[in-house]
Image 1: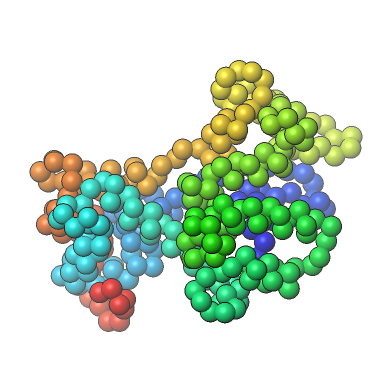
Image 2 (image 1 turned 90 degrees about the vertical axis):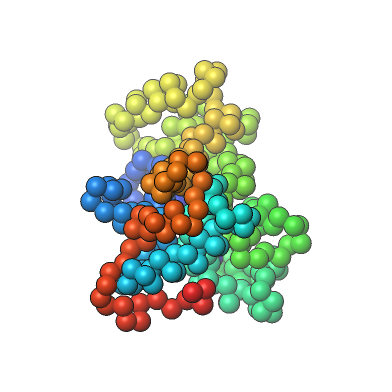
Amino acid sequence: MVRPLLMCFAFCVVSATSKPTKKDRVHHEEELSKLEHNDQESFNFDHEAFLGLDRAQAFAELPPEESKRRLGVIVDKIDSDKNDFVTEEELEVWIVHIHKKQIYEDEELHWDDIDKNKDGFISWAEYTDFTSNNSDADADDAATRARDERRFKFADKNGDMLADREEYAAFFHPEEFRHMKDIVVQEAMEDMDKDKDGFLSIEEYIADAYALEDGEEEPQWLDEERKHFAEARDQNKDGKLDRKEVLDWILPDEDHVKIEAQHLLHEADADHDGKLTKDEILGSYKVFVGSQVTNYGEALHHDEF
C-alpha cells in the first residue's frame, strides 16, 4: 500500500493500542554512510559517500588501475560544465545524486504497478486508482486524498499532473527534497496547530510530543521540552512558534553533503586552488574509491563503464 501521508516522513508514530511514548518530529538527515568517518583508519566512509554502499563494495574488488579508470569515467560525469575542473558545488550535486539513489529504489517497488499505461510517468489518476484498490476505505479517505493531491501538485514542477521519477520521489519522500520543505511544514502545522491560528503554542507543542493517558503522571522530560521550547525553538521569544520556527525545528540545516564535498576537495586539492582536476582526483583515488589486487572477478557491471 502506498500512502505517503501516513508515513509521517520518518517521524515516530504512536500506536493507539500502546503506551504513549515521546514523538520526534525532527527529520534527521540520513548519514552518507553508517561507518565512522575516521580517515586515520580508512577512507571507507568517503567511498560510500562518494559512490553509494553497493558501488563502493564493488569498487573494493577491483584492481587499482581498473578502479582508477572507472573513477575517471565518474569524474567526467561530475564535471557537468565540461571545463576540466570539478568544483565543490559539482561534488555536492554528485553526492546528492548518490544519496538519493535509495529513495528512487524505494519508489521502484510500486512504479510498474501504478504506471498502468507504461508511459514512464505516474498520473494523479493512476496514483489514486492504485491507492483506492490497495487500501481500506475509511472516514479519513477524502481528507487524506485532498492532502495527497496538494502534495502531488507541489511536487509536480511543470504542472502537468504527470510525475516523472524525480517528481514522484519528491511526492513520496518530501522531507528529502529541499524544494518540498514548505509542504512538509504545512502538513506538520496542520497536524499540530489545533486552534488553527497559524502558530504553535507551548500546549500544542507538548501535546504533540506526548499524549498523556488518563491519570498518568507527566514524565519529567516534558519540563526539559518546555525549557527547550522557550530557549531554543521560540527564536523571537513571543511564546509561540511561527512557520519559520517550525521549519528550523523539524528540518534543521544539517548539510552533511556540503561538509563531505569540502572534505573531499581538501584531501585532493594538491595545488590549493579550490577546485580539482581529473589528475588531482586520480592522484588521490584512494580517498574517493577502494580497490584491491585480487578477487576482481565479476565485481562490477554497469553500462556507464
